[in-house]
Image 1 (cartoon, rainbow, N blue to C red):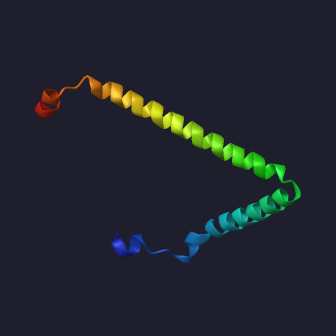
Image 2: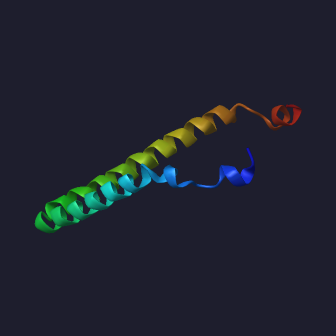
Image 3: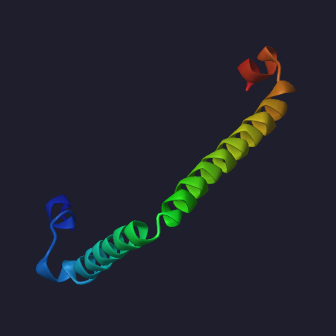
Length: 82
């Protein structure tokens, strides 16, 4: 297979893509209408985003702490000899 053929999209390749975009557009419009009717939903969405960002930062800090503990035992000589 040539590289040009690999990156070429044929007309049959868009069968699922337009349905996904249509569903996403309808979902966004419905979300906007629901937020307009019930402003409490916006508060809940913002709170959920802040909580998810906090959980992500805690997970990242925990992963970096484990990485630091694992690499603390290595000395400069050990890494150069590798």
